Length: 308
Ligand code: NAP
Image (cartoon, rainbow, N blue to C red; front, top):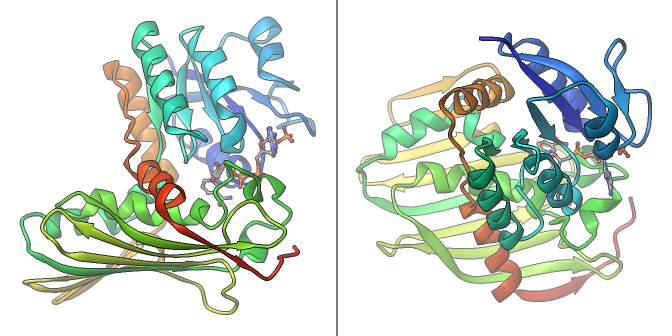
């Protein structure tokens, strides 16, 4: 089968750090174009300032990876799907749930593959954690996702704007893991969101969920953590404790600890290729639903202004 001709749209941090190397390493794909308003793209690859320009006068593409901020993703996705282009959406899949549902309808109508990716689900410890938890009784869960926004998101103005999610930008990664590994669905009971006085998105959140069997799930998100960073999920079960740390890379079970190299984006692109080959879509909005519910029902508290 000929390689899928793919364009990368939005040449920012994640596109350069992960998408370009993962595409280069996967023979199922060939990079045929890049799109970004700034810069010249990648040496030897045709570059366009906008997706319109690429679609009008660029090389033919079969697929596109949309790596822009979520607020501008729907318009680009709709433009590509209207031409039957297979789409890889960076997380979160959109700024609203309804726009993602609209994209699903378009993908169905055009026969294109729509992949709403959750990269953290491809971290090394996640699949074995899901298998180990299947069928177990969950007693309680603690999710702690504390990082330094100045280290991970320097100068990213969009992340503080409506639809940028603030601390839920990393927090949704934790929720993408939790919704994948826990055997029962869970839902929000209460939340407190802390908004800096000068920002439109939260810098911290404290949330209580409950699963359908009554197990409490507490989530502590904070972007003000300096020093060691924390991306941990601890699950207490009838068979002992499971701890996923380093964002899902390290899995500790009662009798052993497993750690593996980072293969998240290699796994994502292998999955995207398989979806295209089999004519399927993969869109799970559950993590975005939980975040939307926090904005819907959470108490809002104003805290000290934040400057980059
Ligand atoms: P970023 O560094 O700010 O890059 C986003 C790129 O999108 C920019 O370089 C920009 O390129 C383009 N863009 C198009 N329209 C834009 C607009 N209106 N405002 C700002 N940029 C615009 O962001 P990122 O960290 O790569 O994140 C992009 C997406 O990937 C987000 O949804 C994020 O959650 C997700 N993600 C990020 C990471 C990470 O570690 N950073 C990890 C996984 C997933 P031009 O200005 O050249 O058009």
